[in-house]
Image (cartoon, rainbow over all chains, first blue to last red; front, side, top):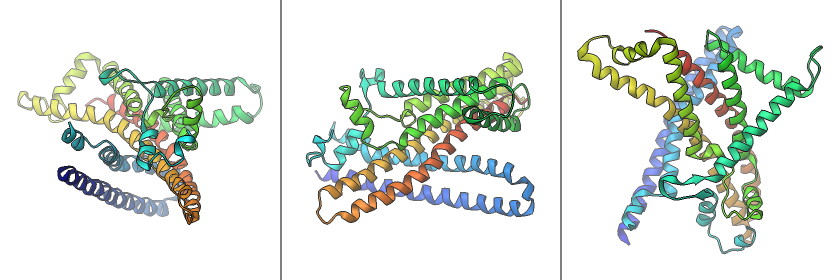
Length: 88
Length: 273
């Protein structure tokens, strides 16, 4: 019983860290990229459509690792493999 | 479905029930019937939509209505692809059009109410039904594998089999027998990272969205069991609307990214070193 509680507690902490650290990395990255985009948009307004398209592409790429982490964290939340091996 | 929610189903069970696929078979040979059904139905629907949109309307004069809409989508995708790929882009534009419209259609099923697909499926006798094919890792990996095959086919078509294999051992460090192992390792990782990141990005976005919709639905469910829970109900409406509006952006953005990245990969694959 205590072993199960132990595993669950550490899993919950792990999930929090995965999502928290991933989110901070993604947000800082997008913040830097967004600030560069705004700078260059102010410098050359005629390039805004092209830059905006590229920016959305980069948003998707930067968010990718974070969302992969969220997917893994959800896996741990609902179908914890550590808990499964403890029961089996 | 409604009778189960009369207090006999705990929140965890509710989420588990909504996260289970309609399966046939077991172990490795499990087939997710709901994913296959929804993705093929939507592919047919999108193809029919585009076909009807092109057929309607006269050839002369400015296009209106459905034909205008389809032409807007086509011109958008054509301009995006021509920005990136400089060559005969007929095939790539067709591929991008299919990918964008199909994935946008599949993703937008996330905006349906959480319990609605399950209720409809229960009328046909199915216990579980997950209506989002792109929230199933099998669905996204299948699409990414096809993109991987296309990247390899385009590379071989541009460089020849011998040239392609030579690039595997010679790039990026240089043609020296000592460097063959690092070259192969790096090329392998680079080639593997493309479909893996493509599939997991789409899966993660859609799965997280779907899960959040279920958790917001749980807010409303908790209202039903507590007398002073009217704030939960209002909270569910507000949070649900905000998240749904944000998710519309995510749906279209992920479809756009899944469309544009294969074009980028294929144009990179045809580059000679």
